[in-house]
Length: 116
Figure 1 (tube, rainbow, N blue to C red):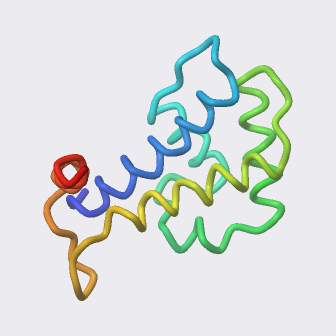
Figure 2: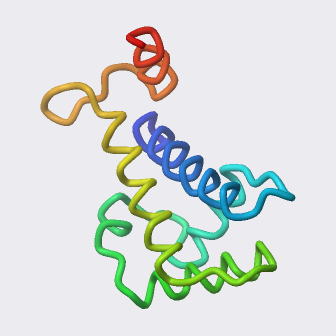
């Protein structure tokens, strides 16, 4: 797996797990949990395009998988917002021109922290 793919998976899965953690405070979910949910709906090699093209059916399926994992009801709107938030976070990590990432995700986030 190339570095850009690793960064994408890490960013998206960490964002989705953050949404899960905001929804249920009793358990701490991690990126691996989110990866398992996303691959149930979008297949193992999902891409940014897959997430951007997600349909209402995808969001319903993701909500169902989330409900099962969290053991509390999750609606379609929550699942859709989790995907949207993950894509927003991923897009925010892009800093270079012509589709090139300036360093890895950790470097990008460290740079952002230094600017604050």
